[in-house]
Image: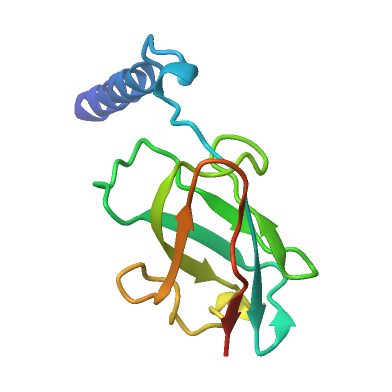
Length: 140
């Protein structure tokens, strides 16, 4: 019983340390990169991929697990607006590998994993300063 009590105390201490590290004294505005509006469309077999999730993975930047990733959910008409910090605020300037996850009934990927891994996806996007309208992504 004594060992169990120490385990519980250690767990509480570790959680407290974790949450205090996550809420360091830096303001979120100090670490945010400038973003630019990004809009696009995603079609599969000529039809809108409504409900699919699109993720932008920076090409020339080491992965930093604390940075949010630009992402979007595809609407009923196939269009999407990219969000990084807020609703459809955009993405930082740069080149991106684009991944897509489109969950079907039962939790399977409708695209069979072809576009879910940045190392295998052939989709690319470039974000420049100002408003960005990407060419439509057309998947088979």
